[in-house]
Length: 265
Image (cartoon, rainbow, N blue to C red):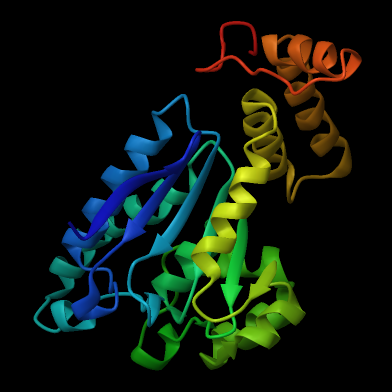
């Protein structure tokens, strides 16, 4: 399978890209498989944190499969776009926190897949870039919108308009990578981080992510309203009652599994 879902620990799902012959280039089949995997994880109530990773040592994902596209007509390319957008948006729409584990190349659509995640763990071998302008295209998997939100408009413009690659050290310096680890350790480090995050309230994790995503780019007043709605949903949840009880009783919280959602709306 070019994409599979693994369960490396309780409450954690790992979406693993495994197409070594193309360094996980996003073909039509790969995009469909990724969208299916995302739908599976999104529908799993017991998943508190997800990881997007690669089983290919040299690359996270090198972007679109240009060999497949070589024989495409304009109509073929437009038809494929509906499939590929479904894959990128499938990652972006995951309701739980998502970590990208990046070893090696994350170029074009591969960089956009990492950007669609909430947090990025990169190894010292990681290389990021959006080179679409060098092959007569523009980023189409969210890159022009997600990269500025991570690194700021001027840095994003320079990367996108030049197509320049950014190595791991610079990626960490500009905020494109959240944690930098030794070569080959991105996947293990992402899992360790995911385990830490998964100790939090499942309801609170999802509502906090939604508030972060929905509020960004709005005015402060609008953002605070979005935050207030997320707070109210969470405050009415079983998780809030369990969290306060666990704190007062000096014990580890026992979150409902699967989460009880009838009262968190």
